[in-house]
Image (cartoon, rainbow, N blue to C red):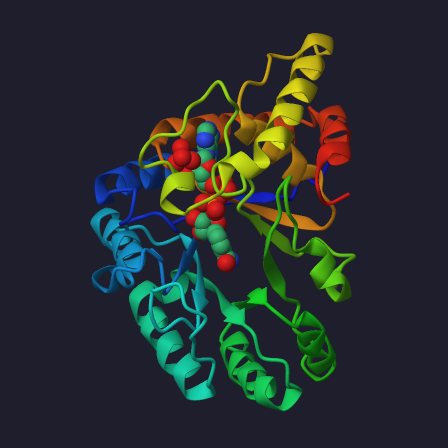
Length: 306
Ligand SMILES: NC(=O)c1ccc[n+]([C@@H]2O[C@H](COP(=O)([O-])OP(=O)(O)OC[C@H]3O[C@@H](n4cnc5c(N)ncnc54)[C@H](OP(=O)(O)O)[C@@H]3O)[C@@H](O)[C@H]2O)c1
């Protein structure tokens, strides 16, 4: 168990399947429960509707202004120049400086962390100027991180001269994990796991809505049916042996699997409804109480990452 693991509220579906009113309610609940970290990105929602570019961050900013909140911790992923789900981005120092200044202006001291969002480059000499720009931001007291890096070893080598203590966002769930790709960075809890439900998988007992996360993001649920069935069977066995209240959701299994995975520092949660957020926060308390470790070991034997 790692008691320092924290929850981060994701915003990828805001202004897409999650309306402003719903996002406001979830922010109210998350904040009132004492949580402060929010994950955002310039290109959220990535719904390929250019009119919605930066719409998720606008909702966040409006909520902050409406409530006069001053102690949020906003993690902003930068580099994207559109929300069309293309790999195009801009990590030139001038762009980083402009977008950083913009977010500093919008979020002030609540801008807690900046992450590079997607980098497919391989050549050290093209990546190094990005690190120089990030170094200037770090000097202003903002944490620096990485997300979606195709060649992490190049960042690792360059970092010998910079000494960044990166946080790294990675996809990590029962069907897939980026953890092996970041081998150079293993050995320290620095990883913030996203997509823990593989984009919204559910047990067969819960049906997928028309606007479910898997539907709008084209997650091939049939492909994962067998694994989901095995997870459900493992959970049924576990519930039968356990004296604790039975677990019922795929999301709970995802939380258990992520919580106990190596080097995890934070869990990005992506509830689409207040009720999902409420249940996630309640379940997180159970995790922090050290329950369900046995289930993790069982799930690890099923995961495709073993
Ligand atoms: N760094 C990156 O490149 C990157 C990439 C992806 C995401 N992220 C971040 O990580 C956050 C979460 O990612 P994700 O949306 O892909 O996560 P996810 O956990 O794999 O999928 C979220 C979906 O799971 C279902 N769910 C979540 N909590 C539930 C609960 N308590 N009960 C039942 N169902 C539940 C919901 O599906 P339904 O809506 O269908 O009910 C929800 O929309 C994003 O918002 C974003 O901030 C970062």
